[in-house]
Length: 458
Image (tube, rainbow, N blue to C red; front, side, top):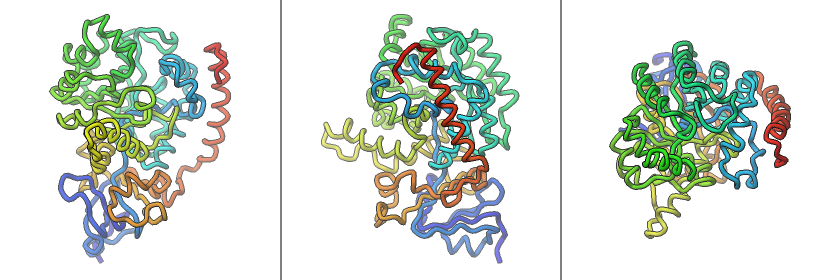
């Protein structure tokens, strides 16, 4: 009998997403505590280890958990509220999203974040980067309970035309985030990390950009911000600074390896080069980007060595579904950047898997612990069932996963070595209560939004 470990996972395919051997056929992963002890061929792992629990899947793939590098934990209750009619009238974030967030109570954020994180577990998302929450402590409390891994940030706006309850002074914004770092960073056995967040160039003073950059380096954390996502933002930057947004951030020395730029859709070639030079990261959110913006220059970014990750942009319009985002991205970028040049590849399928795993881990400054299945790394692992008619036959598992599988095929989700969903069954004990209360609270908040905005659009 070999060494006894807590868990052994076996499947037809193991896609490690490591730089060395990416795919193992008839593979297995040994897990002890929160760490991966070994990965290799099934017969080799069986010789070396005995599992207290063994999950063996035949026609399935084991992968590192997906990473959502741009999520809004608090926006899920708007799912189905913002229809195509509402989203057609810009800017959606100023007209609906921020006013909605201003109405949320702390207990609302806890409830909605729990719902959102259960959505993540269901869809194989094991780690997220929060774009900015009105009550970040409650997002952290949800993380403690659900078992996911997350980087949490407060929503920070110190200027602009937004509800006063969402705005704070520059000093308050600084103190709030520093306090959050000092009280929450590293909690939940290290699953919680705290970063700085700048909501938008139009809504944050330049002083806040300077201070957050300085403080992020002092505390060894990152900064995330929405950038180049709207025409109004480009016009604002040109009028105020005489430069486009990325040019301005480069000019003030803000860009760098610990910066995550969400969307970055409206860029010139010069701006793409500035991002590459600075080694900042970009998060591509296919569903929302293609609904509201121009397709980002992702092929150009990749060719210049920019680290591009994937994000869902929260659940206000779509699900927290990174697998669907990969497929949409592949199809749209082929059409937009490939078809005019008779290039039917555009970006190969395996690159999107990298964006959803190893690239995401690198963007979140967490790549020494997550993003791939390797010895010593955290046991954040998912299993995708490939045994159904729509995924048969499996001639190439990566192609099958990207173009034929869907999030309903995600069978098991493990985070920090703990099984949070096994064979489609959640371990969360209050799942039904969370779902029922979310439906009730959504109706109440929608009525408040009607009154607040004085608009009869819902």
